[in-house]
Length: 87
Picture 1 (cartoon, helix red, strand yellow):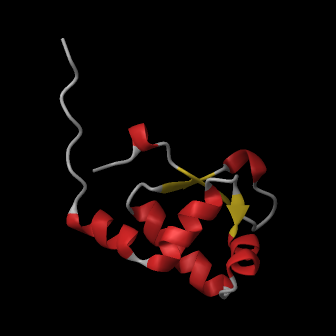
Picture 2: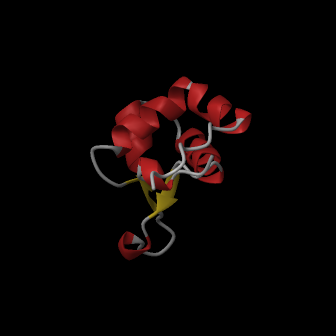
């Protein structure tokens, strides 16, 4: 029996993905895990901006922390595989 089609993304997720900074963050994370600081340097925005947008993406199940890379207060992030994203 075939699996049912995935549910469409919710409005909040669509709004989260519509933000150009969040799109740039996701594009960068596809190259490998990164911290808010490394993303800020790479994208030319503040660490506060990257941190906030990472939390928004995480809230919608689009990124997740990488606990095995964590050192002290530093949090590493990676994109969630498409098949695990929440609707």
